Length: 551
Image (tube, rainbow, N blue to C red; front, side, top):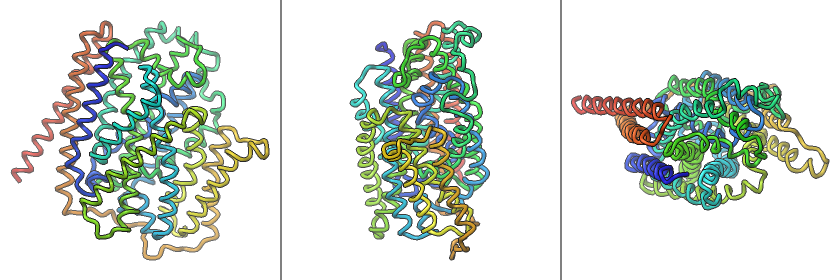
């Protein structure tokens, strides 16, 4: 990398930090810090959900699979759009109707404090695994692109993410997510045509690719795996406590549904654009082994991008992948503060609650860094991400989603399903290979992880009796009219910050055209587009604020 790339990364980092820290004064209470005022525009929440999920594995996990197996990486990701549409229609509005800040708060309302605490402890423990595995790809990107030590990268990036998440709360998370979406979409629209040109055109790429490279299913990623993975994502995206925040922090049930629909629509289109570059790199350099393939996406970017643009792409990758980390940190702090500390200190002031929220963000972040250090010892990021998902996803999130629709489930039934499913999954993952000499393949692991909790929950539906008490499954969505004006002001402030950041990024694109050579035209068009759109957003917020002051 050239000095210009390093300069661009530093500038991009400063912009992201400035955006995140600018929300420090907006998060003065629990609802602002953990729900962004409770009425975030659905478009912002939808893009944030997409980036939070998308970024956790796109560049390292799915990029590695695309390099090794080809088109099946696109098949896997496009299957996620089905989950998004189903969540938008069925699950997201149900979560919004609970009027709960967190899933833990919903569990308390429905099943009582004891059940909530068991789930909270399980979630926080497992969440460390998720968040640590999300931080590792961020550091891997820095390691591959700069040669900077992987462990120092984990420490540096973990520290940056902790700081702006602890200061800015959920608004800092969602706005930086949207900004990263804009950056990376623009960047990949430059990487893709340059990659195709580098390989000698699409015709040459298809001729030189491995024989099975364009199979819809390949290797261990069979039709059975894809079907199970689709079901898993319906549960994981619909019930993951961090992602549920995106549904509960909208204005109403209709907006919550739109969050899911936007997620589905983006996954219907984006995988083709995102996965072609690492697939093309297979033809350019076919010699990478499994662990080296984790850096395939970065390697193709280094191969084709002009000076400065590589730095912008890497900066975008770093903070986009980091969006999964900041989402999990904010959610963990929400659970610790709202569902553990607050009940213990019912008379705590907003000031003391916010102090604990920020402190817990930092503590959880330090623990996350420790877990990220262990990822290389566990067989690499692909193994860690897919295994954690298969073992824990259905068991932890499926029962809570089921309870949104069921009148029969009790605290004991859903907790029993979770514990039994986790025990069985862990046995087949870790003990049966040693004790029985038998292990499940990737498809069987995913099917067991999703299918067992569903079968157990279905069984209880036949055996159990209606047990809702005073709780209503058809609760009306509650909107606190007294906080509507505050939420609108926070929305406008968030859009204003986003617009200024977009103008700054657009200007960076335009400046980089000086060194871009054949990519200059792409940079100029995208830079102008981002700058103009940011300017229009700023004008909209300014005019809306003037109208509000007059009224």
